Length: 225
Image (cartoon, rainbow, N blue to C red; front, top):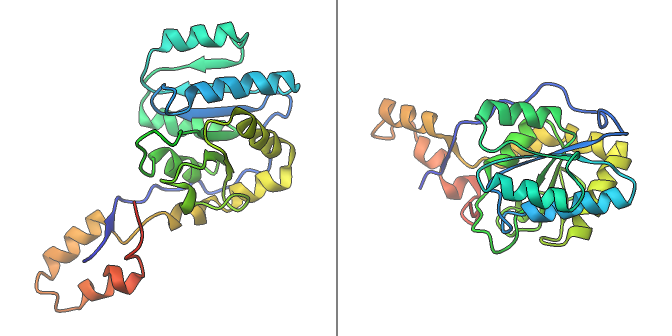
């Protein structure tokens, strides 16, 4: 069996050394605006950080009841700190990630999650990520090496990780520096286009490409996507 994956996303050339503005740091969320996806946890974390004296500007992009979420933010006194964009083009998602200091992927355990494109996009943007310990991706990343991991649905844990990332510039720089290696490590097997072209060029496997790229040869027989 030959594993394949989508074509890799091109990564930004230069890593980030520190948040752009320590007085007004920023974070970005892309995904469905639901409790299970962690949108509410992000709002609560912004409120908690505000009480700690950290005025985090948080931008949300994705489908959902935007007006309801704006109302939730207003109830928490966060009207000036959060922004809900609704659905936006993928190119704008990438741009927003590059402009933000942190990308948050807060999925709760009850959300039917795979390995979301948000993680690939954020790593390619060289923006440090804070992710929940959702089993679908927690075992694919290493906290302190290429991300920070918090306990899913634990607002205090999320706020703590964001605080750490904003105040530890060495850690911030390291996560950004390691993001390309982390991004590349998430891919499994051949790019889909390479797989198709290789098969069409050598349908009888005369070059032995099937064995060379097999699950067993790559040591990926236990990998779950």
